[in-house]
Length: 556
Image (cartoon, rainbow, N blue to C red; front, side, top):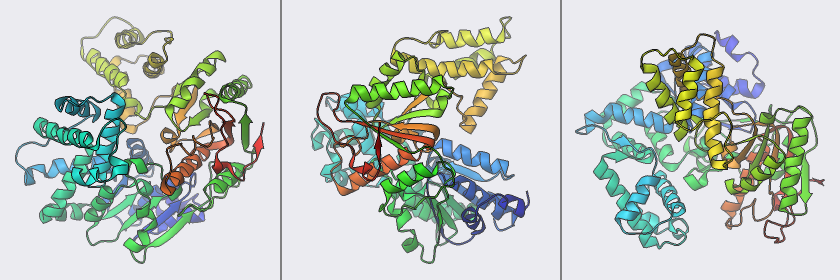
């Protein structure tokens, strides 16, 4: 593509981003404004114009799905050679490449998950912890490391180190034993990867010079989600250069509990004096009515942009119900009516503050015979049942050809890991079944004459592209898991004080994050947005509507 062709179709804001190729650039991109389009066109335009060497550009983001999206967009623009990775993937590749130059022996293996080792550490120290407490400690380990804090320093932070039912001393003992068990097993967690590479680059000038020679231009997407250790790594990668473009939305900072901080986005002009700032405010996702409501909720948040939309649509609905049972029944009945009138279930989502709030809704949707899927924080191809099924399919494909029809072979393999023709009644088993059924759907959609090895190739290709197979049904999701996604119709349930904002949010920073959570939920909607709340919770206790709804009109 020519430079002019790459710029075709961009609005003035996006074009400004694409043409601002040199020096530090900060893009404040509101929800639905086409930031991925802008930054991928910027990279492609820089290469087509001869300003960038394609092999010297590093595009960074925070999830595998987002990295896969960047790679797909860049390949479509004719620049597939650009490195587009998560921070962790980029750091791991560099650490493995330079390991033999710095250390003796082979690189450590990478932990799949912290939780089993945290439980082992607790048992080793004779400390009785529940799975919930172990998960909490695992989160604290991650938070401590992305802040680059020693264990003793972390334990001084009482608001962070406390775990319900455990003393700070016990938490510290488990953390130290966790590190000891990792060292003994010659393994690392993903935060160790960042810290280890940072240590190598800061203490081995030769290695740092090689990396800086290789990568000279950096683009960071979702910059509001960067952690202190990732920010430090970016600075070390850059050295004394200034060719960095960061794109983010401070109003969508919802991962502070994992160490993310919007202050790096907000303070970018101080970190890089003379940096250019571009605001992207033209929203292409949502209607004018949804955008106006979202602006009302987030107004006054530092760094938030005032969105605009040219699309008109239905008025936002804020629905007040008598109690939680009536609220859940109303949502289910309204969704059932939509589907009855012809709306596709997959274009509808119900979002909630925490996953447990969706459990009772599943029961009510079952009553109305509304099919649904529960959105998981675990990516599709990392789910245990999917990984197991793909291993089995690979093994079967490697064996001698069978006389059995292809689809029967697939069914036999999937049955061996728990699939059946009919979904199970048990809710947890049903989620596992939905994943396996999605694999069967892919198999059934393969061209005539396909063989098992063709299906394996298709699934491996989808995994590399993070192209999850579709799962039918209304989407039920936490707000955190919904970030980056969108639907025609979105219901946000339980928008009551004590839920959004959550009851445990007490500090100004915590309440501000709860406000941003609601903003993220609202901006997932393309055409219709419904916010519901009930005057009484599931125990009959009185509730008030969320203070974040001030200025929004109630309806029934």
